[in-house]
Length: 269
Image (cartoon, rainbow, N blue to C red; front, side):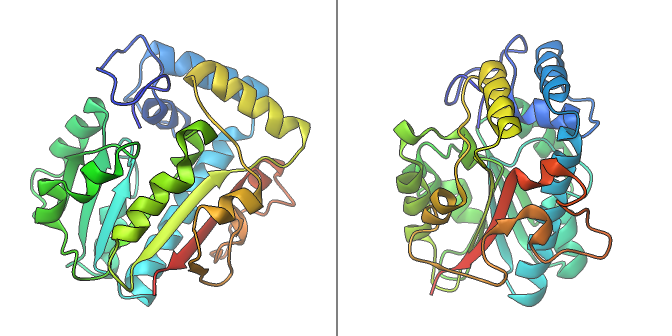
């Protein structure tokens, strides 16, 4: 996803950007004053938000280890990948299976520049321009097709991206188009912020919408519909800490912010 206010906008450091806001919240340095201002306002609203962002990265790692280690997936497509950070998707995947091919897909030039530089010496990981709002361009992309074999299963990663797609943009149709194009035996991972009906969720959504221009929290039932008719792998669609937790994974009982996001993985038959 590009700057919060648009789809595929030109680079403008004066406008806050989703990827750079996350970078700042994760302690990174690839951000600008506008990104830090939005981040600081979000932190003021919900001081535990940094814990939530770290939990998102942690569940992404657990999902990758499951897909590559248990499900045997050797191709990953990370849509709306964001800026490189500690323990990138390809790094986690390659620790499990070095032959895994990874395509990072984003429409933000800052993201693409950083990813390209990071991956200069990696022959199995690639950064490609693409936009979730235009699934046909992803599916038909010569670069994506060149790096992934669409006759074999693919792991589609939609981590922290679909909640920036408003209902008016028809998220189920966008995600569904990608799912329909996936080969049999592929998997889909979605991480999504939750509308819990509680005041802190409403306030966080309001602050994110104010700063980034677009965001839409959804109920667990609404997120489930984004998977279409696919069957979820155990434990299903659950709050982030409950998705195959590692020892020491923070509990939502101990940290209220962790009830504001869910994660699930489904398999395409």
